[in-house]
Image (cartoon, rainbow, N blue to C red):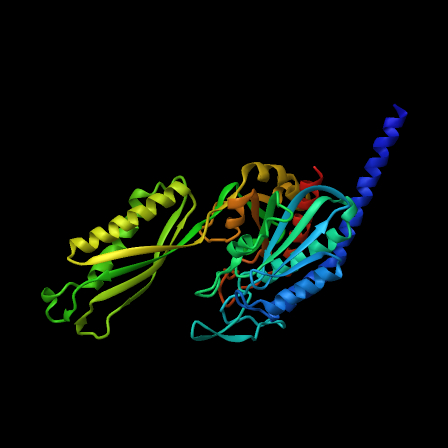
Length: 423
């Protein structure tokens, strides 16, 4: 009995010392995380063009002695860290691309980068927090590389380009990473990712089982009428009128057919192109928009009904119409068993009161494509200064992040890694 007491005492002291060492490593690395984040914020690069970003990430991983793969999906970087003991394989993913947004903030590390995007002059800005995601994962890589003796298995660090979508005519993002084998050699058992949020208070983690972010479809509707003089509408078929009826009709799918008490859904027409002159009823109209769904069955129903409605409404008014869809992301679907297993890791680093169940968002994430292949868990961390009621949303020129929120992301991914591989 005395030997058992001594043994338990020894392991208790060892675990306490290990946790103290880890807390010191977190404290020591925070200034680096902020420095890295500011570098990437000041030097943003668009999707599939993250050449300098990828180079800096690769240099850091190489300095840690981590096995490297570069040029994955054009500009992506993959690091492989093997623990001192064999075991499962975990993947941690960070997105690395910026957006065609001109920054309006007055930060000392404000982006001044300019470019031409789709024939339009624009600034380039990390207006969604991907700069923080890179810095967080670089820090996790450094901490885990110093604690290989505590790792039973292998860690893959995935720095992924083009989460915001590759340029027209190019492949990119999670789909291309998967196509090029990022989940193989060694085969990944589970993948984890996080997203900082400018409207969630620092220190908070938000999560949800099953669908947390929406599947995103882009649709194009082409309406064909019959051109005529604006003063003689009876001599033609007005595609603009038909388009108005289609837009109105599509919204009834959401308001009258989608079971919104189960999950949210959205149909938005974002662009209409038609006509050349005020007194000519044109021959055709093009409508472009997006559909957001959080349930596979609801998605199937909505897309089917949109096709039926577009064709039927156009025919009712004497015209013709067709609709085509392009998938941008799947449903970001958190595996229930994986979430339940890893929730204690999040509670350990944030505190039980700060780990909160959230409602799904209709934003999209190509992390979802990894989750179609293997179990995955995606969650949000706070990036809003506590008490700030006027934070700007993502993808806007005034978007800003409280840098003190990043360390929680480092702790969360590190603890998840230890718990997943060692338990």
